[in-house]
Image 1 (cartoon, rainbow, N blue to C red):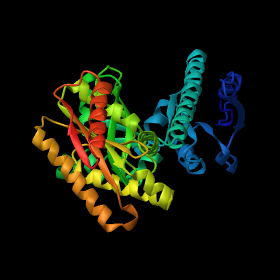
Image 2 (spheres, helix red, strand yellow):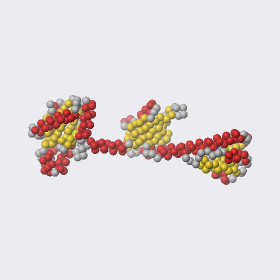
Image 3 (spheres, one colour):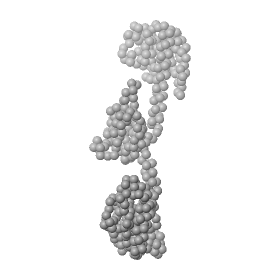
Image 4 (cartoon, rainbow, N blue to C red):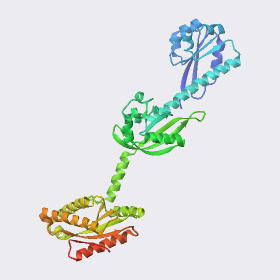
Length: 413
């Protein structure tokens, strides 16, 4: 809480006015230092509050000596008040017509000090508010009902690369350097969400993409309606938290948890997640279970580095052949690929033969990969009842292909 040592000067030859001011008890946050001067002197310049009792001519001499921010009151007879020109009246905070009763004068003094306190309370509240909104990372803004920005914080200015003086009073497109057609073609939803808040008339939470000086950023945005004293809707207040970095980190963590470190294909965990979605959608799906033939011989003969290189190259072939599907390293030299959609046996065979053909070309290109081939088991279903059963069918078909002499494929029946 603030505490002011408030310097009150009473310019008057009448002791009674001074005594009334001295007798007034200090309000919370104030210590009043009251002094009286009988004639104009330079000490008046130190006044936080000047109460001048006298003539219009004396007031005209006094006002230039008083600080602009000081509170100024003129107490005089009605004829003196009537002589005051407009330029002097404009500089006064109050004027008292004398003589007045003790009760009325005490009430005037009480009202004067109450207004001074109210002004200080207002400035303190403003200081609290400004300090708060300008010391936090989220973007804060206040808009009128038409969408003009009435007030923004420092973080908002940093995001848009503009000064407050250039932002306040302006609209969305100017502030964010967007053309209407660019906004319409992009992923931005800011203006639409403002309209939702005005219609809902309550606080809403949104995920928004915003074009900032740092590029397109993701924000969690809270927006609330603002009402006037008559409970009329007059605008909105928004608070946007930049979650771009957190989301990217989360994506990396999820990706790491669902991706095979070596081949960069999806792993078993992701496969079950993906197939769960296919099952829920009741979509047809085909599963290709692939096992590399003679991989162990290559690994044992040339070492794990060559074996790892081979697995990565096979992964790239799978991504090429099954580009519209999901490719998974299931473990060791086993891979699973899934493709959604209704397929005939001829279409399934086409995928298997295309993969084997690419694999033969790989073997031809690399001497260390000699003897490599693959056995493929294929299972298809119009709707998944059980993922593991479907996977088992493809696995059994793969072993049938391997037992037939390898470098072959079989479709489960």
